[in-house]
Image (cartoon, rainbow, N blue to C red):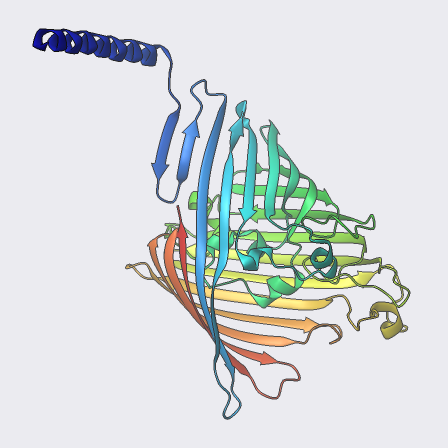
Length: 413
């Protein structure tokens, strides 16, 4: 019996080694995908036949928010939430000239809606970006799908790469945000100077619009000038001088948007309807100018926005022309935002911001002056950081100013 068991064990051992040998041989014949995982760079996969590349990333922001009126006896109102949670996929297919990006929103705040029709119809807002990019010429790339429009710089900078807890009130009021459409983007060099022209054609009513699209459109153009050449690591599209530029770097940008026949008070706002139930269809014209400067840890960024209704005599009788059945109107007016920062050697950053919005008429929103001081600790750049800011909010018509304190952590792999 013992000899029989030894014989069985011997046969099993031979078969086991033979199996391992075959597996080893097959693995040498079939090349496996190239996989790399690095914090802040996500999970990167290159197909064995180099037919495509994929990067998977995830990030989330944990936010504590507390605010109170400066009136005597007022109490702090506080909440804690996951401000953003994003799942991202990007890479290329066929060859590196065909690029794609998909970004999904997962937090309640990301999925909440300010639009009446999005709420009643259950229109999903999970898709932020779903865009394909084809570099068909050394100077030009064609974008097709839903993504950020070539608007103001603060909006195009990722929410992951801000130096304050969130964007300014100017961006929140006047930004063009994301839409479905096509874009053409170029890049040229003239000596040191870099010139980036951009143009887009989109539906004009924000992202994921599945109902109440009345057939309007938005045409948008932008040009950026970088007279001293490119920023280190595309530093013109993240806030704060985390790369500590060795030489002064400066970028100037200007955008123009013509939104034809839009029924929305702003890109991320509500639909406007008259007493007969008809959608508004006025034309909106928006102009942005912005700049960013960085040098040895010092950074300055500034923006101006102007938004107005055009094509009709809206001044003759404003209330009957631009105020809907619910007493709402378009968000028209001007805004300015300026912010300055300095990054210490220990990657602690001090920043200050002044923002102001000036409505043409205070029907749907009031004028605001906001003064903000921020403090950020960058552990691994914008991928792992802790940020806090304190704001004094002076709102037109309010009996007292408001004080706001926010604390946020960012984690992105």
